[in-house]
Length: 419
Image (cartoon, rainbow, N blue to C red):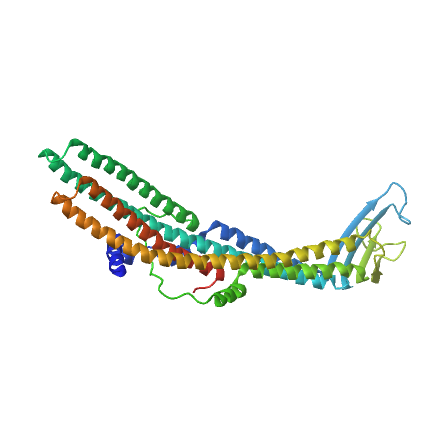
């Protein structure tokens, strides 16, 4: 019976389903156009360049310089003018492994940002899925409201005929007219909610969608859910947020090691070519040699920096402990989310079974009451009450049905995988 009812509704609502927007199309459009995703991707690109910049200490530094000085006195040997051109190459031989660990820290930060972007995408996918579900639910509710209005219009025609022949009093007509006006408010509200549901999916996908656009139906989920332990394992293995925090933790550990590298001496190798002149041309100096090549090796070590390295290390270690506890808390929060989503799924399934029985009974009750009304056995009020019961049952069925889809979307987001 459940499938028969759904088939009737589907054929009415989605007669052009072959040309309808699908949920996958909406998701793909969001992944391509969503501004939040694009912003996060640019941030990832920035992090990639930071990782590349961290490699520069392992490359030699090449500098060229030209200078010219002129004095009112013979201040530069035999002449009052002096010029110099030099080319210098420098290379760090040892830096306490700070450069090595800075590279690793930057790489981990880059990986963390990639996982963060992936988490943003998964959040947007969930939002699009729920927005799509809300569009279908709103369209279904609109159909229910319009059908309820149509039933009242038919009832009004019948009650007016009874009034014209003097069978019922004027207040019976007024009663249906009042219900009809109230039902119109429900139709207007349902239309507005449908439009707002489309507005939401337009924002997420950054595309314009016509109010007359068709939306493809969703297949009912009939498989049993996997066991809790299996879902939890997938969640821990797949969640981008956990991987993001773990990469940040790795980056912090590398940064601590890089900071401790400051306790070691630094060794630099250099070479330079210098050319001198006694005018603006830095060559052919007459009073001394006009060029030289210099090789240098320097070793330097900081003896005391005001406890800066010590305090910086302690600060970073505190940040590391903060991330460790954040990871633990995130896993705990995700486990709670998973439990709630699973409970919502089973609740929606149980509600759907009850709502199906309610809807079948309410429709049959309305049919019988309508026949009795036409045979002057049931009253005008009886038929109004039967219509209210039918409309409520159809809305309850609709809510339960789409709550299953919402619960599945939540679970798939939480475990970051299809079920």
